[in-house]
Amino acid sequence: MPGMPRPTIDEKSLLLAFVAQQHDLLVTAAHGLTDHQARATPTASALSIGGLIKHAASVERGWIDTVLQRTRVADEDAQAAYGDDMVMRPDESLAELLADLERCTAETAAAVAGLDLDHPVPVPDEPWFPKDVGAWSLRFVLLHLVEEHARHAGHADLIREHLDGATWYRLMAAREQLDLGPWVQPWEPPAA
Image (cartoon, rainbow, N blue to C red):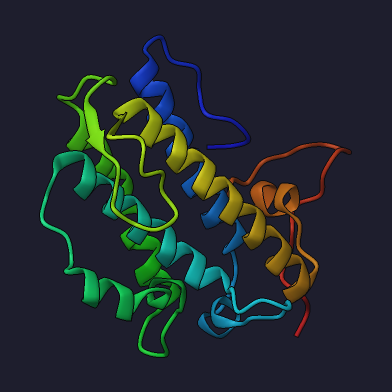
């Protein structure tokens, strides 16, 4: 998916394409990394590229659970585990996290396939959400996922630059094997 999602004629397909594009930006930030590099936290924050990929899938699944009104983790368990989805544990591999994000893309598309974009979604009872709104629409939730993932894709870009100086266009050119002529040279792994 180089650069931008392909245009579509229906709004739901376009929103899902933008959610998938944000996933793709995270995948591109991880291109060529080892598990050790994906776990690294080279900036002032505790964020890692692997943790951000894991978080994107976790948050998206949480929202789809809300959309479908599926049972979620009990509040006390959720509070105790808050933030765990942003950490790539030593027993997790980047390949596993990337495969899980790919599954998440397909799960989301399947979960919302039969729903109208105006489908009401109850506002979660968490301290950062408004108390005076009873429900959002599926459209709102998909736009929120684009926003959420875009923020974290930006984090991943900065982390990647701190790791080895690689930038998104060069990584995309390498990952997609694109010839961008004099504009952008594909990223190459540093010589050992």
